[in-house]
Image 1 (spheres, rainbow, N blue to C red):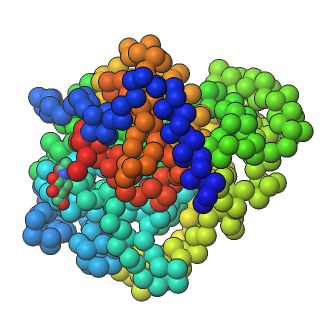
Image 2: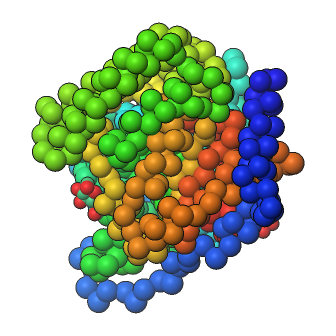
Length: 492
Ligand SMILES: *[C@@H]1O[C@H](CO)[C@@H](O)[C@H](O)[C@H]1NC(C)=O
Ligand SMILES: *[C@@H]1O[C@H](CO)[C@@H](O)[C@H](O)[C@H]1NC(C)=O
Protein backbone atom coordinates (compact mmCIF):
# COMPACT_ATOMS: atom_id res chain seq x y z
CA UNK A 1 0.00 0.00 0.00
CA UNK A 2 2.72 2.37 1.11
CA UNK A 3 4.88 1.51 -1.84
CA UNK A 4 2.12 2.25 -4.29
CA UNK A 5 1.38 5.64 -2.76
CA UNK A 6 5.06 6.52 -3.02
CA UNK A 7 5.11 5.56 -6.65
CA UNK A 8 2.05 7.66 -7.35
CA UNK A 9 3.74 10.66 -5.81
CA UNK A 10 6.85 9.91 -7.86
CA UNK A 11 4.79 9.70 -11.04
CA UNK A 12 3.21 13.07 -10.36
CA UNK A 13 6.64 14.48 -9.65
CA UNK A 14 7.99 13.15 -12.93
CA UNK A 15 5.10 14.62 -14.84
CA UNK A 16 5.48 17.90 -13.04
CA UNK A 17 9.11 17.94 -13.95
CA UNK A 18 8.61 17.07 -17.60
CA UNK A 19 6.12 19.86 -18.22
CA UNK A 20 7.35 22.20 -15.53
CA UNK A 21 6.44 25.43 -17.27
CA UNK A 22 3.18 24.45 -18.90
CA UNK A 23 1.73 22.01 -16.42
CA UNK A 24 -1.98 22.32 -16.25
CA UNK A 25 -4.15 19.43 -15.25
CA UNK A 26 -7.02 18.91 -17.58
CA UNK A 27 -10.23 17.23 -16.67
CA UNK A 28 -11.45 14.21 -18.54
CA UNK A 29 -14.14 16.48 -19.95
CA UNK A 30 -11.53 18.63 -21.64
CA UNK A 31 -9.49 15.68 -22.81
CA UNK A 32 -12.42 14.07 -24.55
CA UNK A 33 -13.93 17.30 -25.78
CA UNK A 34 -14.97 17.15 -29.40
CA UNK A 35 -14.62 13.40 -29.71
CA UNK A 36 -15.94 12.60 -33.17
CA UNK A 37 -19.63 11.97 -33.38
CA UNK A 38 -20.68 9.37 -35.88
CA UNK A 39 -24.26 9.43 -34.87
CA UNK A 40 -26.12 10.51 -37.97
CA UNK A 41 -28.18 7.61 -39.13
CA UNK A 42 -27.59 7.18 -42.82
CA UNK A 43 -30.44 6.86 -45.30
CA UNK A 44 -31.65 3.32 -45.38
CA UNK A 45 -30.59 1.07 -48.20
CA UNK A 46 -33.51 0.41 -50.49
CA UNK A 47 -32.92 -3.33 -50.50
CA UNK A 48 -32.70 -5.11 -47.19
CA UNK A 49 -31.74 -8.71 -47.84
CA UNK A 50 -33.00 -9.70 -44.45
CA UNK A 51 -36.57 -9.51 -43.30
CA UNK A 52 -37.60 -9.72 -39.72
CA UNK A 53 -40.71 -11.51 -38.69
CA UNK A 54 -43.23 -9.19 -37.23
CA UNK A 55 -43.28 -9.84 -33.55
CA UNK A 56 -46.63 -10.85 -32.18
CA UNK A 57 -47.17 -9.72 -28.63
CA UNK A 58 -47.27 -13.32 -27.47
CA UNK A 59 -43.80 -13.92 -28.89
CA UNK A 60 -42.29 -10.94 -27.26
CA UNK A 61 -40.82 -10.76 -23.87
CA UNK A 62 -41.14 -7.29 -22.57
CA UNK A 63 -39.11 -5.84 -19.77
CA UNK A 64 -41.76 -4.59 -17.44
CA UNK A 65 -39.72 -1.65 -16.31
CA UNK A 66 -42.30 1.03 -17.13
CA UNK A 67 -39.65 3.26 -18.65
CA UNK A 68 -38.71 0.97 -21.44
CA UNK A 69 -39.63 -2.07 -23.45
CA UNK A 70 -36.79 -4.09 -24.80
CA UNK A 71 -37.56 -7.17 -26.80
CA UNK A 72 -35.10 -9.67 -28.07
CA UNK A 73 -36.22 -12.51 -30.18
CA UNK A 74 -34.56 -14.37 -32.96
CA UNK A 75 -36.42 -13.91 -36.25
CA UNK A 76 -36.91 -17.62 -36.90
CA UNK A 77 -36.54 -19.15 -33.49
CA UNK A 78 -39.34 -19.05 -30.98
CA UNK A 79 -37.08 -19.32 -28.00
CA UNK A 80 -37.81 -16.38 -25.79
CA UNK A 81 -35.77 -14.22 -23.54
CA UNK A 82 -36.42 -14.58 -19.88
CA UNK A 83 -37.12 -11.71 -17.54
CA UNK A 84 -34.73 -11.81 -14.63
CA UNK A 85 -36.41 -10.22 -11.64
CA UNK A 86 -35.21 -6.97 -10.15
CA UNK A 87 -32.96 -7.63 -7.18
CA UNK A 88 -31.32 -10.71 -8.65
CA UNK A 89 -28.50 -8.56 -9.98
CA UNK A 90 -29.10 -4.83 -9.62
CA UNK A 91 -32.30 -2.94 -8.97
CA UNK A 92 -34.12 -3.39 -12.25
CA UNK A 93 -35.32 -6.26 -14.34
CA UNK A 94 -32.95 -7.64 -16.93
CA UNK A 95 -33.27 -10.06 -19.81
CA UNK A 96 -31.37 -13.29 -20.41
CA UNK A 97 -31.65 -15.88 -23.11
CA UNK A 98 -30.11 -17.97 -25.79
CA UNK A 99 -29.41 -16.76 -29.27
CA UNK A 100 -29.22 -19.55 -31.89
CA UNK A 101 -26.16 -19.08 -34.03
CA UNK A 102 -26.51 -22.14 -36.28
CA UNK A 103 -24.99 -25.66 -36.11
CA UNK A 104 -26.92 -26.33 -32.90
CA UNK A 105 -25.01 -23.60 -31.14
CA UNK A 106 -26.62 -21.13 -28.82
CA UNK A 107 -24.99 -18.08 -27.31
CA UNK A 108 -26.07 -16.98 -23.86
CA UNK A 109 -26.75 -13.26 -23.50
CA UNK A 110 -27.81 -11.06 -20.62
CA UNK A 111 -29.07 -7.53 -21.15
CA UNK A 112 -29.17 -4.81 -18.51
CA UNK A 113 -31.24 -1.80 -19.62
CA UNK A 114 -29.84 1.62 -18.85
CA UNK A 115 -30.88 2.93 -15.45
CA UNK A 116 -31.16 6.42 -16.90
CA UNK A 117 -32.96 6.60 -20.22
CA UNK A 118 -32.95 3.25 -22.03
CA UNK A 119 -34.95 4.60 -24.95
CA UNK A 120 -32.16 7.02 -25.87
CA UNK A 121 -28.99 5.99 -24.04
CA UNK A 122 -26.22 4.20 -25.93
CA UNK A 123 -26.00 0.41 -26.13
CA UNK A 124 -22.78 -1.39 -25.22
CA UNK A 125 -22.12 -4.90 -26.48
CA UNK A 126 -19.46 -6.39 -24.20
CA UNK A 127 -17.17 -9.23 -25.27
CA UNK A 128 -14.81 -10.81 -22.76
CA UNK A 129 -11.56 -12.35 -23.83
CA UNK A 130 -9.72 -15.46 -22.87
CA UNK A 131 -10.22 -16.61 -25.53
CA UNK A 132 -12.79 -18.89 -23.99
CA UNK A 133 -13.72 -16.87 -20.90
CA UNK A 134 -17.28 -16.08 -19.90
CA UNK A 135 -18.58 -12.53 -19.90
CA UNK A 136 -19.96 -13.47 -16.48
CA UNK A 137 -16.50 -12.72 -15.10
CA UNK A 138 -16.75 -9.12 -16.31
CA UNK A 139 -20.40 -8.86 -15.29
CA UNK A 140 -19.88 -9.92 -11.67
CA UNK A 141 -16.28 -8.86 -11.06
CA UNK A 142 -16.03 -5.72 -13.16
CA UNK A 143 -18.73 -3.46 -14.58
CA UNK A 144 -22.03 -5.29 -14.13
CA UNK A 145 -24.83 -4.05 -11.85
CA UNK A 146 -23.85 -6.44 -9.03
CA UNK A 147 -21.00 -8.33 -7.43
CA UNK A 148 -21.17 -11.60 -5.50
CA UNK A 149 -20.65 -11.95 -1.76
CA UNK A 150 -17.68 -14.03 -0.55
CA UNK A 151 -19.88 -16.97 0.38
CA UNK A 152 -21.26 -17.09 -3.15
CA UNK A 153 -24.83 -16.82 -1.87
CA UNK A 154 -26.04 -13.37 -2.80
CA UNK A 155 -25.40 -10.24 -4.81
CA UNK A 156 -24.52 -6.69 -3.82
CA UNK A 157 -25.30 -3.70 -6.03
CA UNK A 158 -22.38 -2.09 -7.84
CA UNK A 159 -22.68 1.71 -7.69
CA UNK A 160 -20.35 2.12 -10.66
CA UNK A 161 -22.08 -0.25 -13.05
CA UNK A 162 -21.79 0.71 -16.69
CA UNK A 163 -25.54 0.40 -17.18
CA UNK A 164 -26.04 3.65 -15.28
CA UNK A 165 -26.18 5.53 -18.57
CA UNK A 166 -26.11 2.77 -21.16
CA UNK A 167 -27.85 -0.49 -21.93
CA UNK A 168 -25.21 -3.19 -21.55
CA UNK A 169 -25.37 -6.54 -23.34
CA UNK A 170 -23.11 -9.31 -22.08
CA UNK A 171 -22.50 -12.26 -24.34
CA UNK A 172 -20.80 -15.61 -23.75
CA UNK A 173 -18.98 -16.62 -26.90
CA UNK A 174 -18.01 -18.78 -28.71
CA UNK A 175 -20.02 -22.02 -28.16
CA UNK A 176 -18.94 -23.88 -25.04
CA UNK A 177 -18.03 -20.73 -23.12
CA UNK A 178 -19.92 -19.80 -19.96
CA UNK A 179 -23.56 -20.81 -20.46
CA UNK A 180 -23.29 -20.93 -24.26
CA UNK A 181 -23.88 -24.38 -25.64
CA UNK A 182 -23.20 -26.48 -28.69
CA UNK A 183 -20.19 -27.95 -30.44
CA UNK A 184 -16.90 -26.22 -29.68
CA UNK A 185 -15.94 -25.78 -33.28
CA UNK A 186 -15.18 -22.05 -33.45
CA UNK A 187 -11.68 -21.45 -34.69
CA UNK A 188 -11.56 -17.90 -35.95
CA UNK A 189 -12.31 -14.30 -35.10
CA UNK A 190 -13.76 -13.80 -38.55
CA UNK A 191 -16.44 -16.32 -37.67
CA UNK A 192 -17.12 -14.64 -34.34
CA UNK A 193 -17.19 -11.24 -35.99
CA UNK A 194 -19.86 -12.49 -38.39
CA UNK A 195 -21.94 -14.09 -35.64
CA UNK A 196 -21.78 -11.07 -33.36
CA UNK A 197 -22.71 -8.88 -36.26
CA UNK A 198 -25.78 -11.04 -36.92
CA UNK A 199 -26.70 -10.87 -33.25
CA UNK A 200 -26.46 -7.08 -33.28
CA UNK A 201 -28.61 -6.97 -36.42
CA UNK A 202 -31.26 -9.17 -34.85
CA UNK A 203 -31.14 -7.24 -31.60
CA UNK A 204 -31.88 -4.05 -33.50
CA UNK A 205 -34.29 -5.84 -35.83
CA UNK A 206 -36.45 -6.74 -32.88
CA UNK A 207 -35.97 -3.36 -31.22
CA UNK A 208 -36.39 -0.88 -34.06
CA UNK A 209 -37.07 1.80 -31.45
CA UNK A 210 -33.41 1.50 -30.42
CA UNK A 211 -31.99 1.57 -33.95
CA UNK A 212 -30.81 5.18 -33.79
CA UNK A 213 -29.22 4.83 -30.36
CA UNK A 214 -25.47 5.01 -30.45
CA UNK A 215 -23.92 1.56 -30.32
CA UNK A 216 -20.53 0.63 -28.90
CA UNK A 217 -18.58 -2.60 -29.08
CA UNK A 218 -16.37 -3.05 -26.04
CA UNK A 219 -14.29 -5.76 -24.50
CA UNK A 220 -11.10 -6.74 -22.83
CA UNK A 221 -7.94 -8.76 -23.18
CA UNK A 222 -8.27 -11.14 -26.12
CA UNK A 223 -11.20 -8.86 -26.99
CA UNK A 224 -8.36 -6.88 -28.61
CA UNK A 225 -8.88 -9.41 -31.41
CA UNK A 226 -12.68 -9.72 -31.29
CA UNK A 227 -13.71 -6.12 -30.72
CA UNK A 228 -11.93 -4.58 -33.74
CA UNK A 229 -13.08 -7.55 -35.84
CA UNK A 230 -16.73 -7.02 -34.88
CA UNK A 231 -16.45 -3.24 -35.19
CA UNK A 232 -14.93 -3.53 -38.66
CA UNK A 233 -17.56 -6.08 -39.71
CA UNK A 234 -20.34 -3.66 -38.70
CA UNK A 235 -18.64 -0.73 -40.40
CA UNK A 236 -18.21 -2.75 -43.58
CA UNK A 237 -21.89 -3.70 -43.45
CA UNK A 238 -22.75 0.00 -43.21
CA UNK A 239 -20.58 1.21 -46.08
CA UNK A 240 -21.62 -1.62 -48.36
CA UNK A 241 -25.27 -1.02 -47.41
CA UNK A 242 -25.76 -4.69 -46.67
CA UNK A 243 -28.79 -4.02 -44.53
CA UNK A 244 -30.22 -1.38 -42.31
CA UNK A 245 -27.68 1.07 -40.97
CA UNK A 246 -26.17 0.20 -37.58
CA UNK A 247 -25.27 3.28 -35.60
CA UNK A 248 -21.73 2.19 -34.63
CA UNK A 249 -20.42 5.02 -32.46
CA UNK A 250 -17.11 3.56 -31.31
CA UNK A 251 -15.16 0.68 -29.86
CA UNK A 252 -13.22 0.43 -26.60
CA UNK A 253 -10.78 -2.23 -25.49
CA UNK A 254 -9.22 -2.72 -22.06
CA UNK A 255 -5.76 -4.30 -21.85
CA UNK A 256 -6.31 -5.72 -25.30
CA UNK A 257 -4.05 -7.86 -27.43
CA UNK A 258 -4.41 -6.72 -31.02
CA UNK A 259 -1.03 -7.13 -32.65
CA UNK A 260 1.58 -9.41 -31.06
CA UNK A 261 4.45 -8.22 -33.15
CA UNK A 262 4.42 -4.80 -31.48
CA UNK A 263 3.00 -5.84 -28.12
CA UNK A 264 4.92 -8.99 -27.20
CA UNK A 265 8.43 -7.42 -27.18
CA UNK A 266 7.16 -4.99 -24.53
CA UNK A 267 7.10 -7.82 -21.97
CA UNK A 268 10.83 -7.35 -21.68
CA UNK A 269 10.45 -3.62 -21.05
CA UNK A 270 7.76 -4.23 -18.47
CA UNK A 271 10.05 -6.62 -16.59
CA UNK A 272 12.60 -3.82 -16.42
CA UNK A 273 10.46 -0.67 -16.16
CA UNK A 274 7.06 -0.94 -14.58
CA UNK A 275 4.96 1.15 -12.20
CA UNK A 276 6.20 -0.90 -9.25
CA UNK A 277 9.61 0.59 -10.02
CA UNK A 278 11.48 -2.65 -9.54
CA UNK A 279 12.61 -5.37 -11.91
CA UNK A 280 10.21 -8.30 -11.77
CA UNK A 281 12.84 -10.96 -12.34
CA UNK A 282 16.53 -11.78 -12.00
CA UNK A 283 19.30 -10.49 -14.25
CA UNK A 284 19.90 -14.02 -15.50
CA UNK A 285 16.29 -14.43 -16.57
CA UNK A 286 16.35 -11.01 -18.20
CA UNK A 287 19.52 -11.87 -20.11
CA UNK A 288 17.93 -15.10 -21.29
CA UNK A 289 14.77 -13.35 -22.49
CA UNK A 290 16.79 -10.63 -24.17
CA UNK A 291 18.72 -13.27 -26.06
CA UNK A 292 15.61 -15.16 -27.17
CA UNK A 293 13.39 -12.14 -27.91
CA UNK A 294 14.52 -11.76 -31.56
CA UNK A 295 13.61 -15.42 -32.19
CA UNK A 296 10.13 -14.75 -30.77
CA UNK A 297 9.69 -11.72 -33.02
CA UNK A 298 10.91 -13.70 -36.00
CA UNK A 299 8.30 -16.38 -35.35
CA UNK A 300 5.49 -13.83 -34.97
CA UNK A 301 6.45 -12.14 -38.23
CA UNK A 302 6.52 -15.50 -39.95
CA UNK A 303 3.05 -16.25 -38.54
CA UNK A 304 1.68 -12.92 -39.74
CA UNK A 305 3.17 -13.42 -43.19
CA UNK A 306 2.04 -16.99 -43.73
CA UNK A 307 -1.12 -17.28 -41.54
CA UNK A 308 -0.01 -20.89 -41.26
CA UNK A 309 -1.80 -22.59 -38.36
CA UNK A 310 1.21 -24.58 -37.18
CA UNK A 311 3.65 -21.70 -37.44
CA UNK A 312 1.25 -19.39 -35.64
CA UNK A 313 0.51 -21.84 -32.86
CA UNK A 314 4.21 -22.46 -32.42
CA UNK A 315 4.94 -18.74 -32.19
CA UNK A 316 2.36 -18.19 -29.45
CA UNK A 317 3.60 -21.18 -27.47
CA UNK A 318 7.19 -20.09 -27.84
CA UNK A 319 6.71 -16.40 -27.00
CA UNK A 320 4.17 -16.88 -24.23
CA UNK A 321 6.32 -19.60 -22.68
CA UNK A 322 9.41 -17.43 -22.87
CA UNK A 323 7.94 -14.29 -21.34
CA UNK A 324 5.42 -15.75 -18.87
CA UNK A 325 7.80 -18.21 -17.21
CA UNK A 326 9.55 -15.82 -14.79
CA UNK A 327 6.24 -14.31 -13.60
CA UNK A 328 4.76 -17.73 -13.04
CA UNK A 329 7.90 -19.00 -11.34
CA UNK A 330 7.74 -16.06 -8.93
CA UNK A 331 4.11 -16.90 -8.16
CA UNK A 332 3.04 -13.41 -9.19
CA UNK A 333 -0.43 -12.72 -10.51
CA UNK A 334 0.18 -12.07 -14.19
CA UNK A 335 -2.90 -9.82 -14.30
CA UNK A 336 -1.77 -7.67 -11.40
CA UNK A 337 1.88 -7.69 -10.41
CA UNK A 338 1.07 -6.18 -7.04
CA UNK A 339 -0.53 -9.48 -6.09
CA UNK A 340 0.33 -13.13 -5.75
CA UNK A 341 -1.49 -15.61 -7.93
CA UNK A 342 -4.41 -17.49 -6.34
CA UNK A 343 -5.68 -20.76 -7.83
CA UNK A 344 -5.84 -21.67 -11.52
CA UNK A 345 -7.39 -18.34 -12.58
CA UNK A 346 -4.90 -16.18 -10.64
CA UNK A 347 -7.88 -14.61 -8.82
CA UNK A 348 -10.30 -16.34 -6.50
CA UNK A 349 -13.34 -16.96 -8.65
CA UNK A 350 -15.03 -19.38 -6.27
CA UNK A 351 -17.80 -16.97 -5.10
CA UNK A 352 -18.85 -16.41 -8.69
CA UNK A 353 -18.56 -20.09 -9.55
CA UNK A 354 -20.64 -21.07 -6.52
CA UNK A 355 -23.32 -18.48 -7.34
CA UNK A 356 -23.66 -19.38 -11.00
CA UNK A 357 -23.75 -23.13 -10.34
CA UNK A 358 -26.44 -22.86 -7.70
CA UNK A 359 -29.51 -24.69 -9.08
CA UNK A 360 -31.99 -22.03 -7.92
CA UNK A 361 -29.96 -19.27 -9.55
CA UNK A 362 -29.66 -21.30 -12.74
CA UNK A 363 -33.44 -21.76 -12.76
CA UNK A 364 -33.92 -18.00 -12.54
CA UNK A 365 -31.51 -17.51 -15.43
CA UNK A 366 -33.12 -20.30 -17.45
CA UNK A 367 -29.84 -22.20 -17.78
CA UNK A 368 -28.74 -25.69 -16.88
CA UNK A 369 -25.02 -26.17 -17.27
CA UNK A 370 -21.89 -26.34 -15.17
CA UNK A 371 -20.42 -22.85 -15.38
CA UNK A 372 -16.70 -22.28 -15.34
CA UNK A 373 -14.93 -18.92 -15.74
CA UNK A 374 -12.89 -20.04 -18.75
CA UNK A 375 -13.16 -23.01 -21.08
CA UNK A 376 -9.60 -24.12 -21.66
CA UNK A 377 -10.43 -26.33 -24.63
CA UNK A 378 -11.99 -23.43 -26.50
CA UNK A 379 -8.96 -21.41 -25.43
CA UNK A 380 -6.65 -23.92 -27.10
CA UNK A 381 -8.60 -23.72 -30.35
CA UNK A 382 -7.65 -20.08 -30.74
CA UNK A 383 -3.93 -20.40 -30.11
CA UNK A 384 -3.25 -20.23 -33.84
CA UNK A 385 -4.81 -16.73 -34.00
CA UNK A 386 -3.07 -15.33 -30.94
CA UNK A 387 -0.27 -13.69 -32.90
CA UNK A 388 -2.29 -12.55 -35.90
CA UNK A 389 -2.66 -8.80 -36.36
CA UNK A 390 -6.02 -7.06 -36.21
CA UNK A 391 -4.42 -3.71 -36.94
CA UNK A 392 -6.18 -3.34 -40.34
CA UNK A 393 -9.55 -3.45 -38.56
CA UNK A 394 -8.51 -0.56 -36.32
CA UNK A 395 -7.10 1.42 -39.24
CA UNK A 396 -10.38 1.02 -41.07
CA UNK A 397 -12.36 2.40 -38.12
CA UNK A 398 -10.02 5.32 -37.43
CA UNK A 399 -9.89 6.39 -41.05
CA UNK A 400 -13.70 6.51 -40.93
CA UNK A 401 -13.42 8.77 -37.84
CA UNK A 402 -15.01 6.15 -35.60
CA UNK A 403 -13.73 6.57 -32.03
CA UNK A 404 -11.39 3.89 -30.71
CA UNK A 405 -10.33 3.93 -27.07
CA UNK A 406 -7.53 1.67 -25.88
CA UNK A 407 -7.25 1.74 -22.10
CA UNK A 408 -4.91 -0.30 -19.95
CA UNK A 409 -4.49 -0.90 -16.23
CA UNK A 410 -0.79 -0.36 -15.65
CA UNK A 411 -0.31 -3.13 -13.06
CA UNK A 412 -1.21 -5.83 -15.58
CA UNK A 413 1.62 -7.87 -16.99
CA UNK A 414 -0.29 -10.21 -19.31
CA UNK A 415 -1.41 -7.53 -21.77
CA UNK A 416 0.55 -4.68 -20.32
CA UNK A 417 0.08 -0.98 -20.92
CA UNK A 418 3.49 -0.59 -22.57
CA UNK A 419 2.40 -3.05 -25.24
CA UNK A 420 -1.03 -1.44 -25.64
CA UNK A 421 0.61 1.95 -25.99
CA UNK A 422 3.12 0.60 -28.49
CA UNK A 423 0.18 -0.80 -30.42
CA UNK A 424 -1.73 2.51 -30.30
CA UNK A 425 1.35 4.24 -31.71
CA UNK A 426 1.84 1.61 -34.41
CA UNK A 427 -1.58 1.85 -36.05
CA UNK A 428 -1.33 3.46 -39.48
CA UNK A 429 -4.12 5.99 -40.03
CA UNK A 430 -4.47 9.57 -41.19
CA UNK A 431 -3.76 10.93 -37.69
CA UNK A 432 -0.82 8.67 -36.86
CA UNK A 433 1.86 11.37 -37.07
CA UNK A 434 -0.09 13.67 -34.78
CA UNK A 435 -0.70 10.80 -32.40
CA UNK A 436 3.02 10.01 -32.22
CA UNK A 437 3.74 13.66 -31.44
CA UNK A 438 0.92 14.10 -28.93
CA UNK A 439 1.55 14.32 -25.21
CA UNK A 440 0.24 12.11 -22.45
CA UNK A 441 -1.93 14.30 -20.31
CA UNK A 442 -2.22 13.52 -16.64
CA UNK A 443 -5.71 12.55 -15.56
CA UNK A 444 -6.50 13.62 -12.03
CA UNK A 445 -9.49 12.25 -10.13
CA UNK A 446 -10.28 12.92 -6.48
CA UNK A 447 -6.97 14.78 -6.19
CA UNK A 448 -4.98 11.75 -7.23
CA UNK A 449 -3.21 10.81 -10.40
CA UNK A 450 -5.70 8.45 -12.03
CA UNK A 451 -3.64 7.90 -15.18
CA UNK A 452 -2.64 9.48 -18.47
CA UNK A 453 -4.65 10.21 -21.58
CA UNK A 454 -3.27 10.67 -25.07
CA UNK A 455 -5.91 11.53 -27.61
CA UNK A 456 -5.88 12.69 -31.21
CA UNK A 457 -9.27 12.85 -32.93
CA UNK A 458 -10.91 9.44 -32.76
CA UNK A 459 -7.95 7.60 -31.17
CA UNK A 460 -7.28 7.63 -27.45
CA UNK A 461 -4.86 5.67 -25.32
CA UNK A 462 -5.43 5.72 -21.57
CA UNK A 463 -3.03 4.40 -18.96
CA UNK A 464 -5.07 3.65 -15.85
CA UNK A 465 -3.10 3.80 -12.62
CA UNK A 466 -3.39 1.24 -9.86
CA UNK A 467 -5.42 -1.15 -11.93
CA UNK A 468 -4.61 -4.61 -13.16
CA UNK A 469 -6.01 -6.45 -16.17
CA UNK A 470 -9.60 -6.01 -15.00
CA UNK A 471 -9.70 -2.22 -14.81
CA UNK A 472 -13.31 -1.73 -13.65
CA UNK A 473 -12.72 -4.19 -10.78
CA UNK A 474 -9.75 -2.21 -9.46
CA UNK A 475 -10.87 1.31 -10.39
CA UNK A 476 -14.67 1.21 -10.54
CA UNK A 477 -15.36 4.93 -10.24
CA UNK A 478 -12.55 6.06 -12.52
CA UNK A 479 -13.41 3.51 -15.16
CA UNK A 480 -17.07 4.54 -15.21
CA UNK A 481 -16.06 8.18 -15.58
CA UNK A 482 -13.65 7.23 -18.32
CA UNK A 483 -16.22 5.26 -20.27
CA UNK A 484 -18.69 8.14 -19.87
CA UNK A 485 -16.10 10.63 -21.09
CA UNK A 486 -15.53 8.40 -24.09
CA UNK A 487 -19.22 7.94 -24.87
CA UNK A 488 -20.50 11.41 -24.04
CA UNK A 489 -17.37 13.58 -24.22
CA UNK A 490 -18.04 14.64 -20.66
CA UNK A 491 -18.22 13.35 -17.12
CA UNK A 492 -20.98 13.80 -14.66
C1 LIG B 1 -26.66 9.74 -16.59
O1 LIG B 1 -27.79 9.43 -15.80
C2 LIG B 1 -28.11 10.38 -14.82
C3 LIG B 1 -29.31 9.91 -14.06
O2 LIG B 1 -29.04 8.65 -13.49
C4 LIG B 1 -28.38 11.73 -15.46
O3 LIG B 1 -28.60 12.70 -14.46
C5 LIG B 1 -27.22 12.14 -16.32
O4 LIG B 1 -27.51 13.31 -17.02
C6 LIG B 1 -26.88 11.04 -17.33
N1 LIG B 1 -25.69 11.40 -18.07
C7 LIG B 1 -25.69 11.45 -19.40
C8 LIG B 1 -24.39 11.86 -20.00
O5 LIG B 1 -26.65 11.16 -20.08
C1 LIG C 1 -10.19 -7.61 -39.75
O1 LIG C 1 -8.83 -7.98 -39.81
C2 LIG C 1 -8.61 -9.31 -40.21
C3 LIG C 1 -7.14 -9.60 -40.05
O2 LIG C 1 -6.36 -8.66 -40.73
C4 LIG C 1 -9.10 -9.50 -41.63
O3 LIG C 1 -8.94 -10.83 -42.03
C5 LIG C 1 -10.57 -9.12 -41.70
O4 LIG C 1 -11.01 -9.15 -43.02
C6 LIG C 1 -10.79 -7.74 -41.13
N1 LIG C 1 -12.22 -7.50 -41.06
C7 LIG C 1 -12.80 -6.50 -41.71
C8 LIG C 1 -14.27 -6.44 -41.61
O5 LIG C 1 -12.17 -5.66 -42.32
